[in-house]
Image (cartoon, rainbow over all chains, first blue to last red):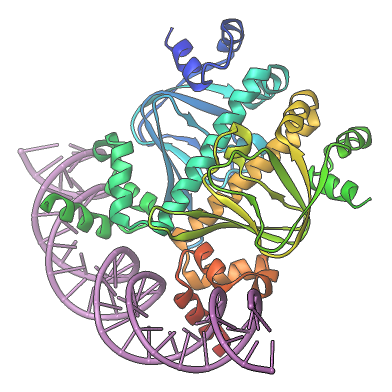
Length: 192
Length: 192
DNA sequence: TCTATTTCTTGTCCTATGATAAGAAATATT
DNA sequence: AATATTTCTTATCATAGGACAAGAAATAGA
């Protein structure tokens, strides 16, 4: 079953076969159509989503109504707003499907139960969270130390599918620039 | 004892009196002189530090030798490189004392022992980590959506002591601008 | 106390990116 | 297929902030 491979990936092979089979049953298959929301600002995340197929993005709306893409998520990744899920507080961002998606979802209650009873489950969960923290910090340093063009090139190298699937606008706000500006950058890159 | 208050703060009052007294004994008092390093890039963080008094900063050096301040830490906060501490991998940043500091430190082994045996300890730890993640995300969105001047004003509001204690240069790299530019921003603010 | 070093300010000039707008291309809707 | 909507490109003009440099002020070291 696909979920089994997916889960051993996500949990970094930290779970035993027995543990894996145990938690496997608690995941619920969910699909989302393009543009559908998995989580809306203001809602408390009741479940998280493990992505089997598809592309999603998270974004926040600032007081002036500007939409900032905070992340892209695809195959083998978790679509989750960590603060909302773990602290059970209203989310400050949205998660939306960019393409049709197949996901497996787990409820907070089940997560919590396993987190407190299975050592390897909580190690794996902690590793995931600290991994997200790490990526965010690297992105945040790159925002300061590298040019928009270099950030774009790096993003594409790490995530080539974005070119075809995500809109220029979404990629631009992820990079912290305007769509106009990203269009110029693309032109300049093509020139070479 | 000061440590007791400090700990109940840091652990968000999630620990019972008994648990608190239990872990209290495992903290070791450490002091750092101004400019001393608590952690250097490349080292694996063996301990984390709870700050009783003083100010610290973390910073990363990029390939061109530019120093970027990634955070300031003071009273009641944790001075920790989460990825290095939790994953026990070499740190990609440094933590250095800006003023003389009094800290209480806990080893990774002890942390790990309590994390796996005391439910409230691991909840509190998880909350701390997700709290750091949350702040980082907010900072990272602000880097995109607000001007350097506004980021500066916000930082000062949240952390007024920085003006007297941290250098212009360190504050500037934290805000993602040059010291020259921050100096101009200060001038403009004073004008009003 | 004197000197050296570091930190901060200010000036000039420059560049990456923003704001706005208009048209082209692509996609969605009927 | 025709039309409406969204996405992308391009142009013009404006500006925040960078690079560099020189001097002033503050701090640390001798």
